[in-house]
Length: 399
Image 1 (cartoon, rainbow, N blue to C red):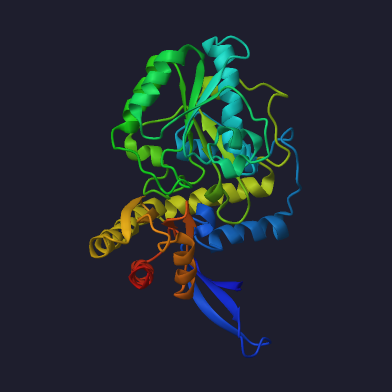
Image 2 (cartoon, rainbow, N blue to C red):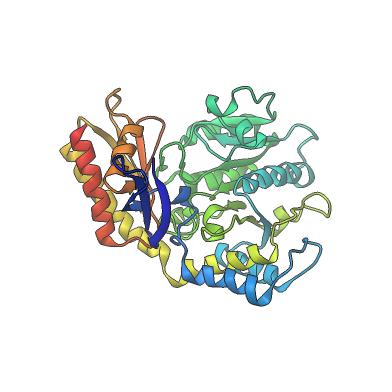
């Protein structure tokens, strides 16, 4: 039972815990945020540059909230910034992160019918097993997680799943049904599945396969984007470019929900007036925050810091795996999207590890019982990485 009272710096939260002896008094302690709101706070907690922009908008410029039918300079700036940072032709502003894969799904189907020539009602969207695209009906229709689907059916049809990082399975499916497949929609690195990193040659081969069969490659970069993996966007690690890319979470700088879909002109161009819209997508305050989220990403060299600090953390993980082979099964990660998976044992429980880490001043989160993810703010410093590693070592040693 703990309550976050305030932020000390961009990587550290101050937590108040009730004193069992005197409930009216509180004990304050620092914790390093190793969850980072599921990568929504890549730029760090309450970064002054972004906060100042919000304050200016609200107190000095006093911006109204307007619909997308009214053009304003803030959305223009947002569109220029997002197309610039992504290297894409067009961007569609949205709000919640899940709206990005939702829109990519829609765009892919329409592109399949209008451009590729798939017979109406027969378009197939391919996704990867173990995926996490959110919790809308489209997202859970794409999922193979029984818990997320229980009692929410019937689900969307026209979906096929293949194992992640299995090129042969994807090639076989494309050869069988490629004339009706509109898109392969997939995370470049699977986050919720436990930070599953594909083989180095997987994405270049997939890109070529999609080109061969005229199938869109749509990448969900909601968790992996904005410097998290050591590049501005994870697909850049593999020197490939998707046809569509969805972003969210850190796109709002940890201040506001901001998301968008970026893509090639001929793909996003299938949208027409009335076929897509968003009341708050690209509204002035959100657009301004989105611009400053990119400004901080670039000027603070967050992707570069994620690469350096991530290598430091992975080195710690590898040493722990060597020291505790009976406890740590595997370590995985790119940049500061990292995880360690424990051996399959009822005693090696990820939730228990997360609770014990909190007691040692590190906030983390388990996934799939035995895997613990560590994904701190990209502003984190070397000594804080060492502190995280020391806490993990102490907890693992005590198991």
